[in-house]
Length: 241
Ligand code: SF4
Image (cartoon, rainbow, N blue to C red; front, side, top):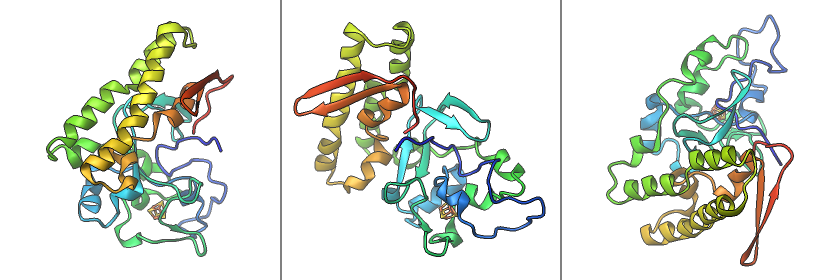
């Protein structure tokens, strides 16, 4: 299902907010809109395993996003590391859907601590500041960081944007081949790095961002793999997946 990628789990249009609300009533609306993005203040949570790195993913620099605080579409200026959704929904992985409780409440990230749906000033002050990036967590791991940087360059969202811009929104000929090569490379390196590094496969969307064959939809393109072939379509409107 197409969904907007929220920069934080904040929304200024939360249905449950009343003018008189002054505390969280645990309706779960915020947490169902998506998990929080991490900031430098949250680094320890991941380093100490209080929040599992296998449960987060990276929105890579240049990736199209919807800024729900500013109500506009834009591109990520840096990595944005977020908690994954759960069971094919955008609801935060750590939300207990039975009672709307947070399974990591005592160690919940900064954005969750800052979010008061009845007064969004705190979250607006922090949501774009000091975002945690992959380099903050893995730049010291020999070989891995270089691999991530190479992947970022070889599967560059900025490059895709430029190709689309010069093709006035379409990819033809060489530009189309370039993007297809990026997608093939991205698909190929994922299992390779897991095998070589003997990594938990659940870490891959943190290390390399989400698969390009999925996020390409953010550019209004639809590319599907059928056997060894790729079917290339242009969507009328770029959805947010
Ligand atoms: S970490 Fe906890 S408070 Fe934050 S969005 Fe997830 S369930 Fe909600």
